[in-house]
Length: 144
Image 1: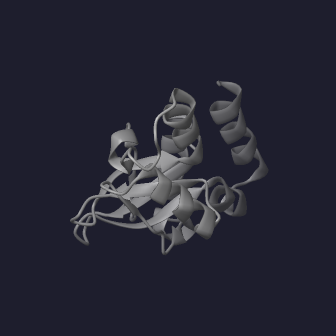
Image 2: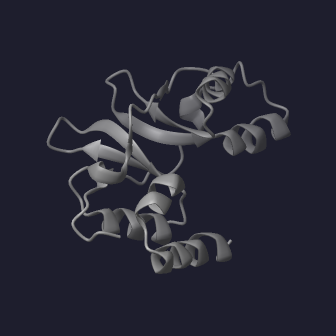
Image 3: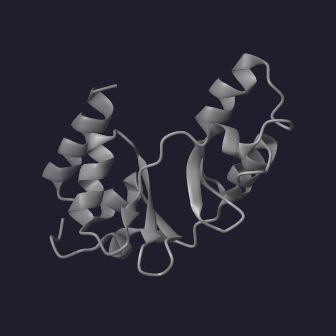
């Protein structure tokens, strides 16, 4: 990976949020329409509150016999890891490896702490060396 790249240089821009008060059914529909498996959860102020995956909806709602139309996205917000847009891209890689996550929200700390993008495995693959990809795979997948 180019050691001068910043998180904002490798992230996907234009990420859409599900509001914390929207239903899991709404979140699932958004995922289908956007063809994604994960959405950031944002509060009324537009700030990041958490992340939700399609797996979260299945395992923590459907599998427990709960109604996805009645549960709120904010109920599944969970632990949140993010990175500043101006951080070095290697810090993003390290954060994803340490926390064994495949998607990392990017926040513009100087710009009002707003969500500006997302770093995914695809973003890493476009910017990583073969050695970095191998290390990422071992640290994120082999540990599970």
